[in-house]
Length: 447
Image (cartoon, helix red, strand yellow):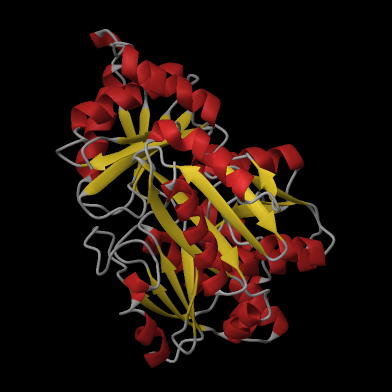
């Protein structure tokens, strides 16, 4: 990647090339200049470059007169919980999420414990691009401090959402693949507190990933048999900053990330009726479940901040993204793999069934994701052409173009970083979903 990947909520890049300490400091000082008074919490996933960037960021913020608190290696959802508990002015999570090891990045949090929304995030981005960094006089240079306990408050919040004693009685055998990211820091004590017999893979948070960090089926081929061979009842797989969760059943079958959110939605709605929000590229399983339980369902544009905006607007009881990111507002306004683990164990314990059976009960759909090369300036005309071609579909322009038919849908949206559009389709079979993507590519080839 020849350029930084920059959005309104953060940035990512290759360390030493596009992302340097100088770039990081300039960006966080733009954030600090617009944040309210108070301490800035700094946390990181387990990547080798994280400590170096954290030191630079702390020095840069202290030079600007801003107090900092260092949470060390901490999961992204834990950062949101800690931020609220501390009453801090904001937080910076140093993470590149599921990107390869040579990447790192910065994710910004507002003081209410969520990824910074689009409006304030755009102001930070504008200031980063145009304004000179603030500098405090020597007498006002701030001091850093450490955050000694980064797990207790988050663990307690997660445990409060489930029947912990019921889970403990089951003594589940669990495999957790933290893949040397931040997930094991809370994952181990949480699952042990729930009485699980735990096999932890990649528990040391050193960023030396045992496999590519995105928890997809192809990247977990070595973990699938480990779940079966350990006689575990469930396998949990996290991305490096632990805001995403994929699930493996006792046979070693990859259930995937889309099922994480849907199974959580099903369990929550059995107990608490209320609105549910997912983004417009997530499986319609959650929509079907909301309709089953008579709960309002809403879609947002793609992106965690957009999901949270919609959850707050509609007072949602649950939400998330189909990339394995459940959001439980009782715990926090951040995608949270630990929420997912606790809820799924609770569902298995309550219904005395396996995770495989819980997944097999859900409406069955197949998703196909493709990329189509297209110049950015052609995207508006492309969406118009697709809407005209698929005139029998219900069309929405919430984020790109989404076309809906009974039992299937197609989403086409432009990339922020590449001259492509992403076409995502879901249907009852892979063939039907692929046909929708191929039809979209044919229409765009004529532009």
